[in-house]
Image (cartoon, rainbow over all chains, first blue to last red; front, side, top):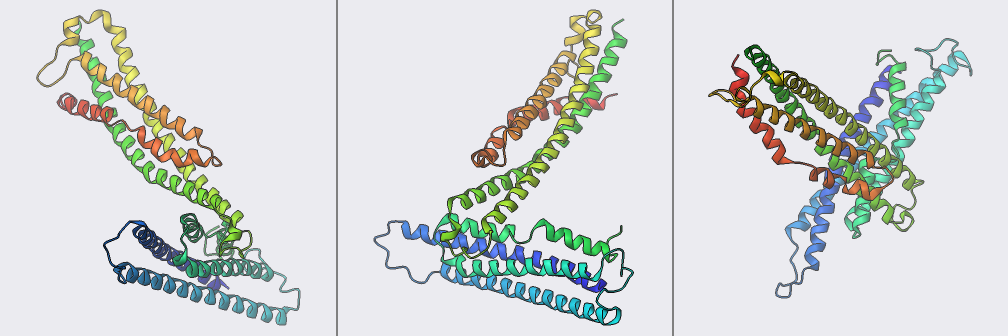
Length: 183
Length: 202
């Protein structure tokens, strides 16, 4: 259980790092797109139809980067799911040993097994939803022409609307309960 | 008979300029910290504006539950954090202003109390290492006024901001920048150069 808490912490840290990388890639994509549409608007009679330019290659490049980030995020969430499974496994074992009510004394400070499960469940759900949002942004970000929508995509990526302050609090509570943070 | 008074006046001026020098450094570094905060404030306002301009239900994000509320909440939260940091910086600016004001008014008071016993020549006479007392008092008073005005203007700007008034938030970084007064800052730096030998001489 203690190790699980540490894993949660590390996975969330890793997610934040990935989020920063992804944000850079996403804003590059949007800048390139903006540049391209600006160029198209310029009156340019003499020039032949533009050949596949270096921007297109850059765009492809940045999209690949973003794809990579999202792939890594999928891995993070898969690991979180594994944590949840191990959590359930421990709980089943517990029920087998102590019956459906669980043990009388708390394992660490005050939480029952149920509370551990609730916290892990909440974290997992938040990250799953956030991951879905990221996947959608990945699909759409390079095909969007409206500047406002572009900003909203970036804003969603940066602000992570499904990871509420509640998640952070829960993680801290988990670390506190398992004694990783001093009382 | 004016000699001991002149000495204590010089001592007071020296202390004031030393404190002005330190406070000036603090002031500059706090203002430098405010710049990125102001930029994020403008960015957050831009994000909120973009969110208001689009209909989530007409976008590829339509199937995400309460996305708009959640995003708005997070934006609000970040805006609050930034404003809080700015307000903290304002209290640092305030303490700089207070310290300069106290120091300067003390030395001005000292002068006023003894003005009768100081003749015009003593007050206006300068030497090879030090400017005249009257010049130095004037510089101090000018510097003090600069900090007082700057603090008030910036504080007023921050106090008029409201998290729900996007246009105010959007224009805030620009207005913040327009409050800069490089000439006054230069003047203070200039003053500090001019009194350098005077501070060193004991």
